[in-house]
Image (cartoon, rainbow, N blue to C red; front, top):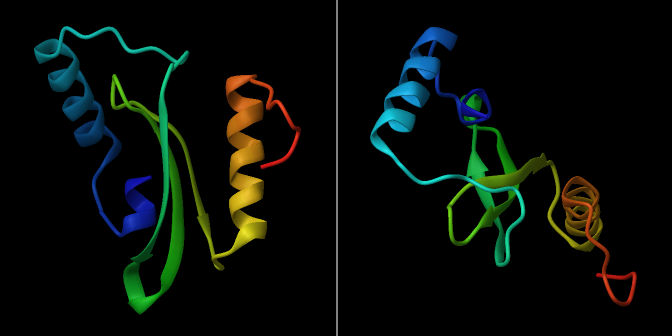
Length: 98
């Protein structure tokens, strides 16, 4: 994901960051969230390129559950993102629509 934002770091550096965080953080992360926050934001990547970032996080643990970049903003990419999130978390919607 860092590459999407134009952050140039080596895999060992990122691995070291993750291990340092894990050692200093006692919280057990979950992929079965009770509350999820979803948002979209236009971000600028390298070379002046602007795209839309769709992301969902578990509100309690702050774990990123799903993220997606799109060239466009609107109901089509948002619906695709929400369906991917629904499949990833294996949840059903009451109405079948978003």
